[in-house]
Amino acid sequence: MSQELLDAIFDGAKHLYPRETLLMLRGKKVKDTIRIVDLVIPPLATYGHGFANYQLHLLPMDFSLIGTVHSHPSGNKTPSDVDFNHFFGRILMIVGYPYAGVQDVVVYNSCGEKLPIEVTKE
Ligand SMILES: [Zn+2]
Image 1 (spheres, rainbow, N blue to C red):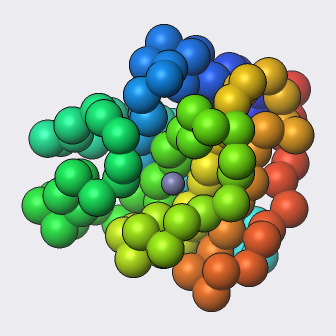
Image 2: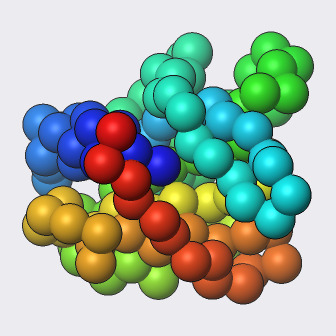
C-alpha cells in the first residue's frame, strides 16, 4: 500500500479518536501480494465502540473489496474474537493508536496469520 493511503487511514483514525474507524479496502491480489489501492467508506457504518454493530452482511457484492481496516484506540493491535468473527474478504487490517507509522499497523489473513506490510512511496 502507498504511504498516501496509510496516511489517509491514520487521518481518519485520528479524527474519530477515541472512537473506532472502519473502512473497506479495495485492491487486488497479484500472486502472493495483495495490493491495496483504495479506501471505501462502508454504507451503514456506525462509528462507535466495538466492531459488532457493523452489518457486513448488508454490503453489496463487490469482489474488488479485499478486506477491512479498523482502528484500536487503545493502542493494542491484537485482533479480538469479534474482529475474526466479522472477518470480511481476504485481510483484516488494524491500526493502533497513536497512528504514527507502519509500526502501528498489523495485517492478518483469514487464517489468523500475520502478514508482512510493505509501504511504498507513491
Ligand atoms: Zn478490533
